[in-house]
Length: 291
Image (spheres, rainbow, N blue to C red):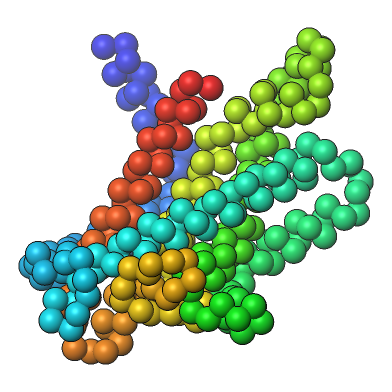
């Protein structure tokens, strides 16, 4: 009863506050309206994709080999997983170690640090097609690799590197200095403090950046068209061409002959992204609880 009375009092006080300040009430309406519009667009998009794609999902779409009759997406699914793992293999260590240097080892007042941060933020805002052209010129032309899974993965690694660096740096800076001071007070050195105290405390924030990077890799198309190509097969080596699930869907829609299969691919891509994000969030939550 007391809780209900307190809730009623607080609700009445809020109403009085909004009456005294109409501008606050207007902001509340705008915020709620923006949230409703955002959720409405998201729900509409998901419902549209599911309604269009689920009826067109057939066993032939999951055949091991692609041909013009089954238009299988299985090679694209495998290529998506390969490119995601290879891109993270290169980008995550470099991004984390770079952020550790910026947050823990760089001296205050260092003029080089603002330049690095500005460059990182600039790279994060470059369109993905520019990264695709850069990867094509560097890996395909200059290094002579041609269309290859490795070239596409390295291009995506360069593209997600700024995101991992910034999120990791912010996660490290959010760790309280009390942890560092306590570790130093017990006689631990700088290296041990960073890797045994600070870094484990920042793992949930670091994993958040990795989750965002995975979502960008899985849904990327423009950055892979030129470096990796569009071959609808599972490559026998990293130096051969292959298409991801997003590129596969783009190719089907571009040809104009397999629209129904493209919608089915969109459903699988949506499920794959949701599954990867849910798994990553679960791991981040478990690591955060242990920390």
